[in-house]
Image (cartoon, rainbow, N blue to C red; front, side, top):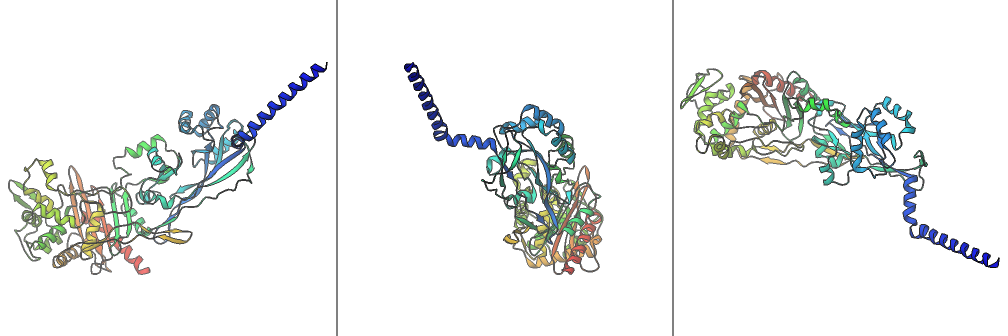
Length: 576
C-alpha cells in the first residue's frame, strides 16, 4: 500500500513539474507573444482618417472641404464568406468583387474601407443584419466635398483610390486610401493630406465593442493644411457661364503683374464628387467614351493652331529684322494671294494697308508677304524667347509644351528637303504645324503688355496651417529681350483691333481693351474662335485668352467673352 502511495505522489509531483514547466514556457518564455495574440482578440485598432485641407479662392470662398459620410468597413480576419455574400447583396455589389478587394489584405486585423458615402437606408439594413455580418462595421468618416461640382474640375482636380504604383512610391499610405489625382489636389497632396490618428477599442469574444481602451491613449487626427488659390470665384463662375452654350471651350485669365491665374475653365467638365465612391461601369464608360473628352484640361493640355492671334509675333519679328516699318505698305489685298502654283486666301479684300492697319483688320495677305521674307530658323528662335514650345511651369499637372515647326519636324512630315518657303506663309498667319495652348498665348500677350517680361503662372496664393501661413510661392519673372520701338508699334496695332478692327465686340465704355482675334482653320470641321486681350490698354493689369472650338469667327464668338470678363474684373478691382 505504501509503495502505491509513493508512486502516486511521484506521478503527481511529475505532473506538477510538467505543469510548472508549461506555465513557465507560456507565461515567461512565450508570454509576450501570447499577450500580443490575446490583445489582438481583445483590442481593436481604428484608424481615425484626417480631414483633408480645405481649398479657398483668393477672397475666402470655400471651394473644397470635407463632410461626414457613412463608411462601410470590413475586418478581414474577423469576417467569413457568408458575411461577404450578404454584404454584397446589401451593397448591390458582386461578392466576388468584394473578395478580390480583401484578398491582398486577408491577414489584416484592422478595419478596411469597402464603400464610402453609403446611403442611410443601406446603413440601416447593415445594422439590422449585424449578427449575420461578423467583421463588418459602420462608421462616420470625413469625405471630400466639391460644392461647385464641375466649375473647378480642371483646376482643383479630384481624388481617387490609390494605385499600386502610387502605393509603392509612398508607403506612408494604406491600400484603399484616396489621393489627389489631378489639379491642385495632386500637385499639393503633401500639404492637403494631413496625418491620420488612431483609437483603441476593447471588444468581447463576439467582436462587439465594449468601449475605449483606457490603457492605450488615442491619437487624434491632424487635419491637412488649407490652401488659398489665386483664382477669383466671380471670374471663374462668369467664364463658365459665358461658355455654357459651347461643347468645347477654354478660358484662362492671368494677372500681368504677378502671374496669378485668376480663372481657368475647360469645357466640357465633370463632377469630381463622383470619384469619392466606387463608380459604376456605365457612368465611367459614358465619361471616357465622350468624344469631347471631359477629363481633358483644354486650357493647358490642348494645343491649337493660334490663327491670327499669332500675327503680332510675326509683326514684332518683321519690325525687329527691319523688314518693314509700322507705315510700310505691301501689295494690296484682293482677297487672294498667289505664291508659286498655290493660291492663299484672305477673309476679305482689304486693299492697300500698312502694318498697323494689317494687324487691325487681320489681313492675311499682308502677313503672307511678311512670311515670304522671314526665315524659318529665325522665326523658331524668336518664338523660343517667349517660352513657346516648352511648358510654362504652371503648378498643376498635364501641361502641353505645344509644337514649333523646326526643320526636323518638317523633314519628317514632308520628306527631307521637300518643303519650301511656302510653309512660311501658313506660319505667318498662325496655321500649319504651329500649335499653342491657351495658357501659352495668354503668357505671350502678358509679355507684350508688360513690355518684354512676364511671370511664371501659378494657382497657389498661400498655404495656411492653424491660421498661420506656412508657404507662399515665389514670383518668378521671365525677361524677354525685345525691340521696344517694335513693341510699341505692335501694341498700338492691338489697341486698334478692338477700337476699329476685328475685335470691336470686346469694347467696353469705361476703359480700353487691346487684343487680337483669331479664326483658326480646323478642316474638315468648322474653325476655332480665338481672342486674346489685355486691359486696361494703357496700363495693363490682366490678360484673358479664350478659345471656342468649331464655333466660327473669333471676333464674333470669343471677343465678347473677353469683354465681359474684363468688365467684371474692372468692377471687382474698383471695389477693393
